[in-house]
Each structure stands twice: as C-alpha cells, then as structure tokens.
Image (cartoon, rainbow, N blue to C red; front, side, top):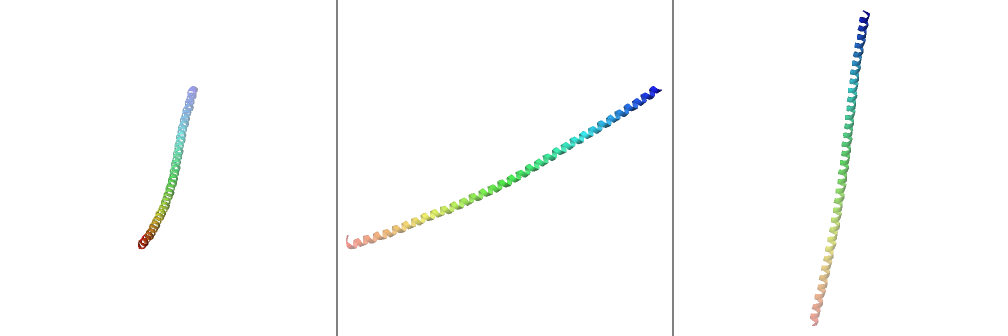
Length: 124
C-alpha cells in the first residue's frame, strides 16, 4: 500500500512537473512571439521613418532645384535683355555713323557741284 501511495504521489509530482514545464514552455513561446512582434514593429517604424526622411529630403532637393532653375532662367533672360540693348545701341550707332557719312558725302557733293559750276562759269 505504501508503494502504491508513494507511486501515486510520484506520479502526481511528475504530472505536476510536466504541467509546469508545459506552462513555462507556453509562456516562453508567447514571450518569444511578443518579442518578435515588437522587433517587427520597431523595424517597420524605422522603415517608415526612413521613408519619410527620404521623401522630405527629396522634396527639399526638388525645391532647391526649382529655385536654381528659376534663378538661372532669370539670369539668362537678364543677359538676353542686356545683349539686345547693347545690340540695339550698336546698330543705332552704326546707323548714326552711316547717316553722318551720307550727310557729309552730300555736303561734299554739293560743294563739288558748286565748284564745278563756278569753274564752268569762269570757263575753266
């Protein structure tokens, strides 16, 4: 009877030990699952942060590029205006010189005509 009682107690202790081991295993598995889930969530959060930072940097770069293009376009337009003004002035100066030369030529031609007429009157 003692052996039976001892065996029953041993079986009960063994059963209780297995039950505790099973519970510990279940708890460890849950903890592991939670840790993996937290790690995944952290990784996803970091990835989202990185993606946002990259988008922000891209937008900033795009704005800077647009600003640079605008500034360059303004410089090009200013250079074109200045060149047009210089060109117009150059052609105006050339026109004035041509008109002065034409006027001078006409004066000289008139003087020559007068001299020829005077010489004809004098009989030369």
